[in-house]
Image (tube, rainbow, N blue to C red):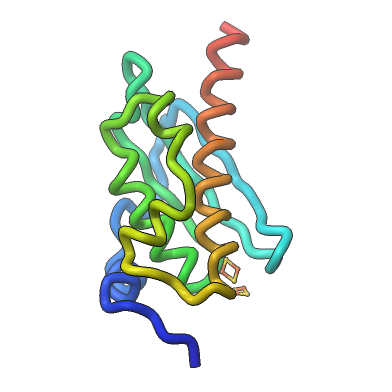
Length: 126
Ligand code: FES
Ligand code: FES
């Protein structure tokens, strides 16, 4: 049995910012090479700042928990600040994660970065 911290279990059972944003400014779906799971991130952006973020996960408990924590951390950050977030910071905030589950937090951060990239590319097309 994998051992999760209380905080990981709390974010898994009560995910923050779970769902979809209608009329999102950007969205991206990313898959994990390690396990084949997928998740989607939706962003609302104003003046280069993330004003709203939601996610859907087709992944495991660790992915749901890390995605939930990731959305709490990046809401209100500028795009540049959000790009710098890395998976270790999320894992630390959750009080740790079993090592075999690190890739699940990678998936959360990779999907965020892809959504930011989508947003920037949509601006470039305007
Ligand atoms: Fe798919 Fe974890 S391996 S949910
Ligand atoms: Fe696939 Fe966690 S095992 S996201």
